[in-house]
Amino acid sequence: MTEKTCESALAVDSERLWNSLREVSAFGATPGGGLDRLALGDHDRAARDHLVAAARERGWAVAVDPVGNVFVTRQGTEPDLPPVLIGSHLDSQPLGGRYDGTYGVHAGLEVLRALDDAGVATRRSLVLADWTNEEGSRFSPSMLGSAVYSGAHDLDAALARTDTSGATLGGELARIGYAGAWGGVPRRLHRALEVHIEQGPVLEAEGVDIGVVTGVYGIRWYDVSVRGEGGHSGTTPMALRRDALVAAGAVVRAVSELADRLSPELRATTGEIVVSPNSRNSIPGSVRLALDVRHPEDAVLDRAERALEELTADVARATGTEVTIEPVLSQPPTVFDPRAVAGVRAVAERLGLSNRDLVSGAGHDSVHLARVTPTAMIFIPCVGGISHHESEDIRHQWAVDGANALLHAALDAAQESED
Ligand code: HGY
Ligand code: MN
Ligand code: MN
Image (cartoon, helix red, strand yellow):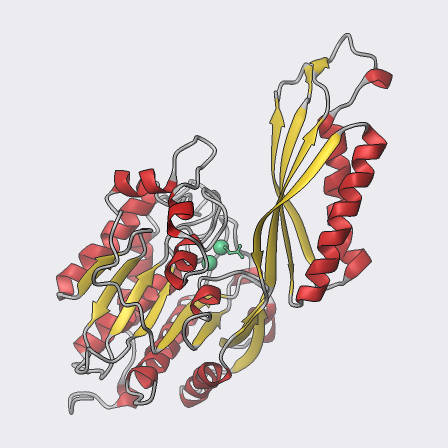
């Protein structure tokens, strides 16, 4: 810490943060005020280039790893010490919001800028990360970049993942110029911190400034395939049909009733449906459903998995169709490092920000970082708790409070001696 700044005076630049968020929201902006910035598309490239340009302006080092994760490093006075990583993601849902992920990356960018402007030298380097394909909307599973970085997912398998057009993740990285290498990428970390919108209603409803995230729900994804018999909608008697979409509808209804059967904390969603041949006057021969099931306890997720196997078999028997279910992602519930979590809580108290513990129903890259380093997350409220929707919104003060909490939590960690 230099004589130029004392810690309590250290704060982010509110206007610069807000401008930075406004600028990056232009990449993939939708008419409805949200974002369509799918991983590794041209809009994601533009948002990445915007971040890299901001880093280059300040003379910070930029590295890109083989799965396209971007790392911006503000060097500390002891660069051989494992650094502190702050980061999130720039990709969005197909009709997503301007702040999910993007806020965390740009709050992190503002933290580095504020430290620079205040002339604060940190012992440990600070690394700002943009993780590839956090949303998993274009390439499943989600959180793929951070999974490869942490060793939870094989690199070659990730590069081979395809989107619905058949484009591979590896091919798209090369196309947009973000197929990197491990050289220059920080592999040992001292701490990982992520600030993110809550994506739920609690903080706003309670008027609380900061969510101290203690853990994340477990997440399981499944692909359900329903195979019936196609045919002519005008000539095939109803009694002779094996309509795959009618069967799929029974599966969707049963999935939506799982929480009533198993646990009120369970969240079960059918978010995607692909019908073939998808023509008004042809009976659907096959349907693919994409399922997302979440709960804070693995045991309940196991019971949900057994219930899914049973209900799909029941629907197959009742409709004369073939119904198969294939696991795509199994992310166990995460409990963040209590010491790292306590550090976030202490910073919120020090800054006079009201705070409460929260478990996140949304998945985050921090789940994978928690496997390799003490990790904690900071939540800010979002309007109406709405997310994964174009109307996702935050208040300017919330953005500033979260960024200041990140600044001081990262600074505390960057000055720590012990690893
Ligand atoms: O799916 C999730 O929870 C995250 O927003 N990608
Ligand atoms: Mn997110
Ligand atoms: Mn998301």
